[in-house]
Image (cartoon, rainbow over all chains, first blue to last red; front, side):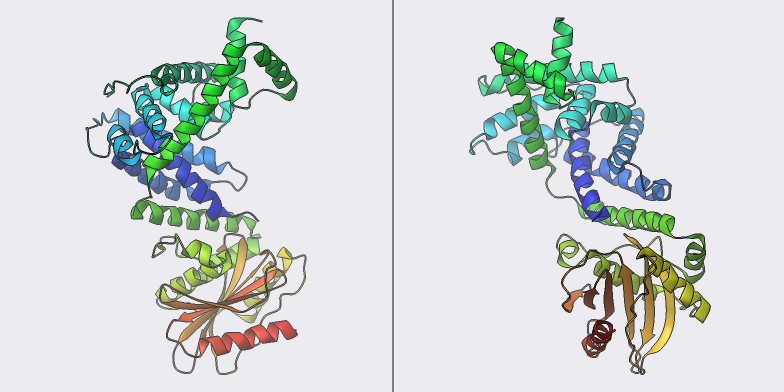
Length: 171
Length: 258
């Protein structure tokens, strides 16, 4: 049976992953999701039953993020930044966590446009067309960003055989 | 084949974007090219690591995000339900009230959503919204009641809805058509002789489930719910209302006999 609540629950988890990938800061990500939900509530009457809930919500989040960027919000280094979180939330003592941490730390250093497509396609499983629509970019642009992002991440992590990645703060 | 084309296909393969014929071709290419196969393996591994990592870092949603998600669900549910109503029913809904669109859903529902079926959860929400409405609207006429019942009947192919027999000591204060996640629902508001208010919430179209009588306490409310075929019923009242279970049991028995 169609369950709006189950759908929303799944989309909330996905939105929070994407917000974190975009903002690289847990507090900023939570603010971004909150603002997205507020706008979605105000526009809920316009959502069509046959519409794609995921595309609609991700589109709103993307627009909110772009608006915030236009306001020149400067990211500050904080305890909730993704680099700090990776060190505290992914303890290196557990098997596989060293590599996991390295992947997230390297991911945080990628340009935003690459983080966007990697999250939408590789993490959230969107089709190329769906992700291109959310980001409002041509299909070819999406594919080239995806390829560049993947290769950069692969080079930075090198399958766990290298030492810790050297982080650079991308603002 | 051109290198760029192969590269694009490699990513498309990883992302499940190749059609079946091209996928088979590409798998043959991978079998003969260990370096390309290693890249595919790495990219698939990368996908999993990113998802797991971002999940670990996301932690639990904050209370405001949880509340807002609840509100969004409510608003979307109302919108979808309104579109499923016919013009007469939609007009009735507007006349008789419907949801308070600005209402907040109180309390964290990490367990609540899973603890009771959606129709009973909606009944509790409608009950709270009703009590918050001051003054209570005038009960609709007999014609309005018939039109409301017809709306529900249409949802199950014109079959009549079995409404429970009501204790003669209860006074009908209000009846209205309200939207819920799966379409229209009927809500009856009764006042008991001691002044307590209880509501009966009737939906159709829910998946047939067990026919037992269930009681649950949620947000200082007492809910008693049961199913009969594709219809589902919920009686909601104050947690301290000692008569509620007896009243609900009589209603359930009358539906089962009908």
